[in-house]
Length: 307
Ligand SMILES: *Cc1c(COP(=O)(O)O)cnc(C)c1O
Image 1 (spheres, helix red, strand yellow):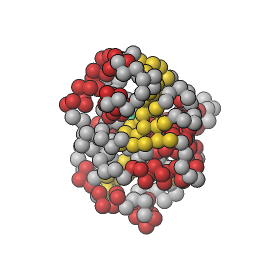
Image 2 (cartoon, rainbow, N blue to C red; image 1 turned 120 degrees about the horizontal axis):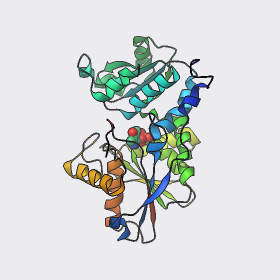
Image 3 (tube, rainbow, N blue to C red; image 1 turned 90 degrees about the horizontal axis):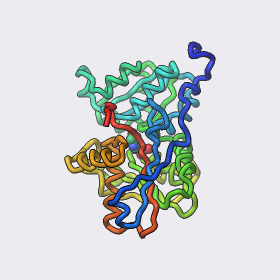
Image 4 (cartoon, rainbow, N blue to C red; image 1 turned 90 degrees about the vertical axis):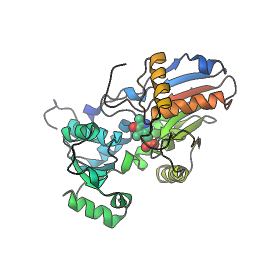
């Protein structure tokens, strides 16, 4: 950390904030009298992309140079962002990855990027992974990783500090849109976003996992971050397309078409589902004429490709 010209640790993570907000012209929305804005959180930082920058920044500050241990699936954007932060800040990072069967196999491109950024990867079976927040299980994991003094960031980076940081996303939007849509994994981004919006504005969460458990998770995250419920939000559970990382040909075609129309890269696992949901709801007549919608572009496709 001393070899970057006297900059303090978090300076190298300097983000572009507020992220750009711009209107796109799309006849499929205009036909219903609805405007569409894109909140380009994918442009916040070149390597800690979108909501991952917002959620990690306060945690990296809190880690204060200690090793960072965190958790994710085999294609986790959060693991990649944490690994990149580790390289940029000179922090040691450990990624606990769901799926013991992945150990000893060639790494997929996402995990290969994590490893190239210096992250140590630890594969655990699904039962252990599910119990990772239990103190005894966590302590054993940390011991196993030789990281007992580590700063632990939960799966997806969603803890109280992260949720409070995501309130800034809502504050940047303020009263610019009536409804702001965001794709949800853990729900941390939605929990903060809803808290930051101006009164009367609403946040729509589009879960990308199947299961319908998110409502309680988001309440708990807001309780931990703010001491109680904040803002107006709701979830629409119809747009997970079969679950995490499931991308149907129809969703893929929708996303490719959106990219062609608007010149914006559309990440398929999350962002495409939120955009699809906004269009479907618009076509169902869910939004009165004169409504302004915003979609949070929370990430970029990986591996990066040119449009
Ligand atoms: C992680 C991620 C999300 C989900 O964020 P949560 O706070 O976990 O709900 C949404 N979009 C993208 C692109 C992500 O990488």
